[in-house]
Length: 143
Image (tube, rainbow, N blue to C red):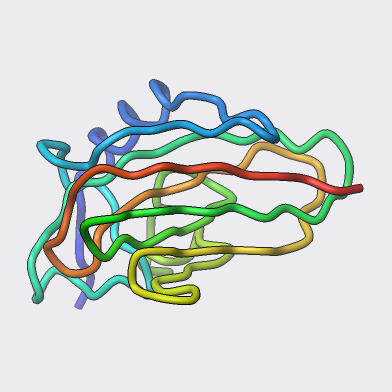
């Protein structure tokens, strides 16, 4: 059994992804956004769909990257992907994922810290099961 999914919505979101710079904080909301991605740690579609936002980070040299997500009024999920669009075939919706975090410290904060090789990566802000709302997102990189 294969889930065939329309990746054109993902491609559109990926092309429009805002670039996050180290030390920069962006504020946004997932309310009213389409549900284009699933995360490995956020509950799957059986539990409801939540809107998502995608951002791009560019790593110029091998670095340890820390990404922080604050979702003051809801339970957000943070995922880091090495490819923005889900790969085709049977590898599934999480094959592009490098890391996923649902709760760090509490359900209103998520954090990913990982070493990354140079390249372009995608940061996904999603909701746990069917939650959505306002968020603040930042990242730092140390070489």
